[in-house]
Length: 161
Image (cartoon, rainbow, N blue to C red; front, side, top):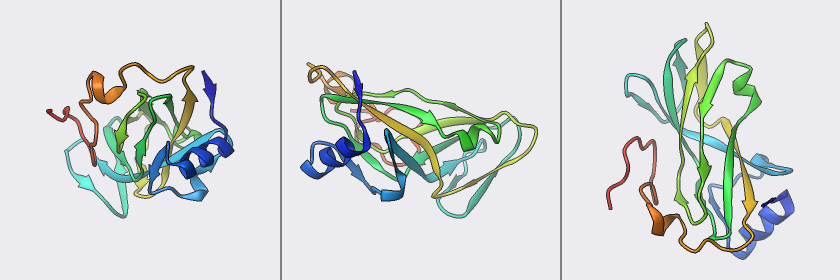
């Protein structure tokens, strides 16, 4: 696998093979793209789509991305919590985005600090690092499980197909 640098990310967006709906030039990094927060779901299940959300110490929360990501069948991606959040005591529970995925992303996180953490909707939350596969997947995400294909907003249960 090979990590896609900024110029290849832009090239794939321009040729339509990679989609980042809601693309923001300021979120492009040298080796990835910073995904922004569209909504936050707190431990009580309340959803916030604007302003700031205060997460108490020792609380789980979820965010959904502003961007809708569409990966081609020959690209997967890793998610990395931005160090800004790590320095505030947030721990993220992320996975890999499968080749062929299309939708917004739901990311779980935990405030492990002793202080409340303020989460502004719209802030950059994690970096998506895209990797080129040696060849396209035989069966992309949509054909394997596809449980979250096309999801919008914080989604905790699989979308039933």
